[in-house]
Length: 115
Image (cartoon, rainbow, N blue to C red; front, side, top):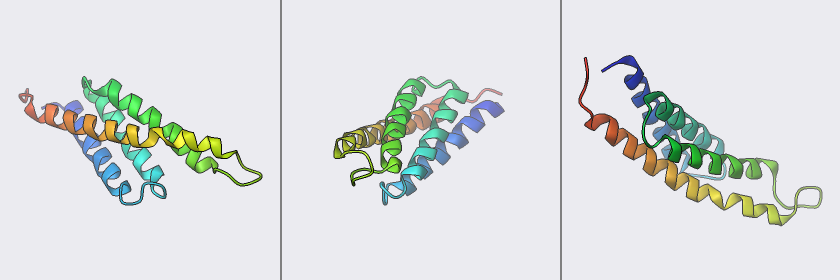
């Protein structure tokens, strides 16, 4: 196994761990989930996985939602409650990201090691 695939596995595993930790409280730990998704995307790009496009899309969906969460919703001075619709892609992106990362880990361990 070369160092590129080893780093890819490590980054995806850390990304899955970050997403798993963040699921305990998704609103307050949205930044942890987003950073875990970013690590998984980086690992997929580094390992040239076939699931890298799916992970990139899931990261984009989650990033848009986290931006809406951190930007604040409602209230007089803030954006209107219609911005709450921007939070809806978060669960879809999260599910896509976890499924793609698990498939990528499964794919990386099923490959034959090349020395």
